[in-house]
Image (cartoon, rainbow over all chains, first blue to last red; front, side):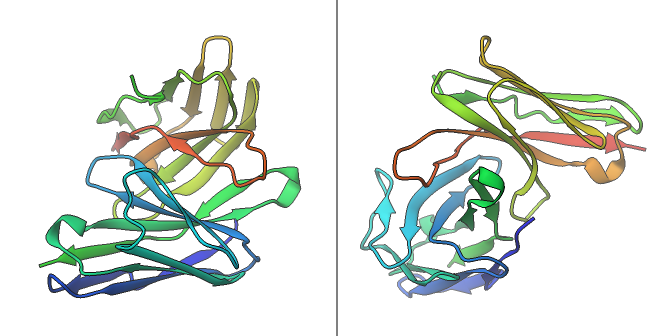
Length: 117
Length: 114
């Protein structure tokens, strides 16, 4: 399968600071990437769809000014959690969409665990 | 009612057992069905991908889709302790413009014991 990396894997920050998470598609170009959030023992919740060269599409209830997404190249999307608060502590996972073999499949990164103190 | 229902478990089985994991769904528009495996503190890993109804086999894994019943299954034969993980079903419908959104089940936690 395709390889997607995320950096950092884990981050601890103080309340009120901003945190940037990178998602890289290592072996294919991804015009579309997705950002998910996962709370303990819960499923993945889609936050936004990131399209290269255009504005991200946010899901209902997700604040676009708080979760800034930039997809500046075909292999890199970034999620910035601005003015983070303890309730933003979660596991953030990105995925890249590939259209190989006449189907669309999402491959996921290893996730970034964010803890806001 | 959630669009996708999945028993969270945990499901404990002895090594070598056949494991059956299931999801039901309500949206008849779903066409693509996937199973992901997620180890603790890791991202999901794609295991099986099925389009429409039918069976698909890959090694010890078999995926079944019954669209008439809105029911999908993943079978694991000769289960191993390394299969211990959370298994997430996911599905999507055809969207114009591409970029299929996935709708996930909550995941079933599986423990394969020695």
